[in-house]
Length: 520
Image (tube, rainbow, N blue to C red; front, side, top):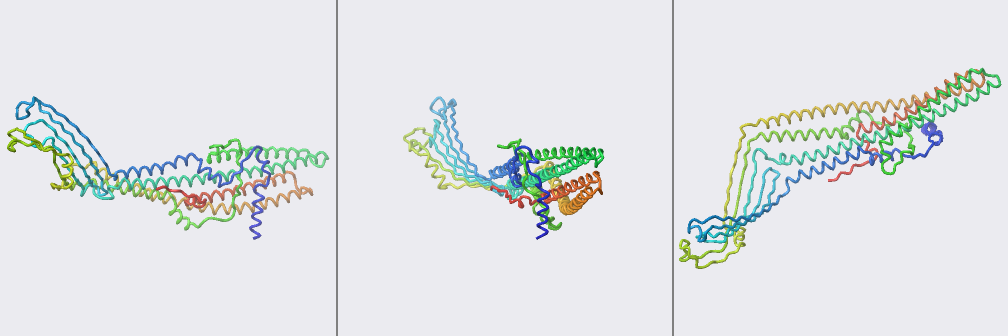
C-alpha cells in the first residue's frame, strides 16, 4: 500500500506540476484519450472511406443471390399477312389474309445444382380467309414444363453457389480490413495522445529548469554587487539561461506539432471543431506493470488478428476458383426433360355433307378461347420427351490455362499466409519485448531522476557553504532536468508500447469496449 501511494505521489509530481495557464496562453479544450478515440472513429476520413467497403460487399452478396431468384417473362405478338390469291383453292377472295395473335407467360428458376426448371403457357389465335378450314378462328393453348440438368460440367451446389460464397468471403475480408484499420487508428490516436502528454510535461520541465537558472542568475548578480563573486560568473549563468530558453522554444514547437498531429488524426475540425483551441490531454500515463507472456500473446494474436483471417479467407476463395476451373474441363453432359399439354378450340365450320371439299358452309358452332386453356390445364393430351446431350470440346487450352492460373494463385496465397504468420510472430516478439524493456526503462530512469535530484540538493547546499561552484550547480540542474525528461519519455514510451501490443494482438477494440455491429 505504501509503495502504491509513493508511486501515485510520484506520478502527480511528474505530471501537471505546473499550472495549465503556464503552458498554454490561450483557450484550451480538455480531452481524454477515450474522447480522442471516439472522435477518430467518428470523424477520421480513412475510417469513413473504409466503412463503406463492407456495405459494398454486402450488396455484392445480394447481387450474387439474384441468380437463384425466379424470373418471370411475358410476351405478346400480333401479326397480319396478306398475299395474292392465285386459285380458288386458296380463297374465294382476291387475296389471302391471315391474322395471328399470341400471348405467352413463363416463370423459370435456376437450381443450386446447376439445372433450370421452367413453366410456360402459350395461347394463340389464328384467323384466316383460306378455304377448306374446319376451325376458324382457331384458339390453341399449351402448358409446358421444361427441366435441364448438367451432369458433369457445371454440376454441383458448390460450383453454382460459387459467386455467393466468394461474395460472403469478400465481405468477411472487408470487415477484417475495416477492423484492422480501426486497430491502426486507435494505436495512432494513443501514440499521438501520449506524445502530446510528454511534450507538454517536457515543456514544464524545461520551464522549471529555466526558472532555476534565472534564480541563480539573480543571486549571482547580487553577489557581484556586494563583491563576493567574480563578474565572470554572471556570464556563465546568462549563457545557461539563454540555452534553456532555446530548449523551451524547441519544446513549444514540439507541442504544436503534436497538437496538429492529434488534431489531424481525430479530425477535430470536422463539424464545429475550432483549430485555434489548444488540445489539453487530461489522462495520465500508467507506470504499473502490464502485458502478457510471449506464449499467451502468440495464442491471442493467431486467434484475433484480422489480417490473418483475411489471408485464410483469400485461400478459401482461391481454392474455390481452382475447383471451378477443374470442373470447366469436364465434357458437357446435360439431361433435358419436357412435358407439355396442348388444347385447341375455336369456331367450328359446318360443311355440306360434312365435307370441307364441297366448300359449302351450312353453319357454324362458336367456340371460346377459354376452352383450349381448359383442355391444356386438364392434361387431356400428354406429351413428353427426355434426352441426353453430350458435348466434348476439341480444344480446352483456355480452360487448362485457367486451372494452371488458379493453382498458382492458390499456392501463392498459401505462401502469403505462411509469410504473414512469420511476420505476425516477429511483431509479437518485438511488441512483448518492447513492453518489458520500456517498463524496465521506467524503473531505471526513475532511480536516475531520484539520484540526480539528491545530487542537485547536495550541490545547492555545498554552494551555500562555499564548497561548490555555480558551474557545478548548473550542471546538476541540467542533469536533473534531463533525468526528469528521460523518465517522462520512458513512461510515455511504455504506454505507447502497451498500445502497440494491443494492436499487434488484435485486441484494441475489446480493450476499449468497442463493438463492430454487423448487419445481415
